[in-house]
Image (cartoon, rainbow, N blue to C red; front, side, top):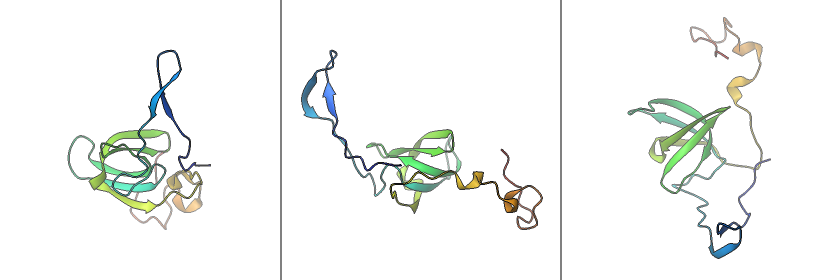
Length: 117
């Protein structure tokens, strides 16, 4: 299950006692929330490519995108498009589904290569 971020967090000192003031918590950054499924098409820079996965928002506007076990850090919000908003469930990578239609050489894929795993 995927939470909604209602847990209250507090800064603590080096002994573990709470300090004054709660930790700053950004629920949404540029319309995205942690747990949303996004597609990012990065057109330039070191991280050029296409990424689809669960987003972890940062207040800086640079996000982490987790695709299966791989996490890519520092993707700018301007490259991200919403695929699905968080709804409380955890979803597996849809490309990892073992379907006969996704196997190498399937006529439904045409010239596109099947996904390497």
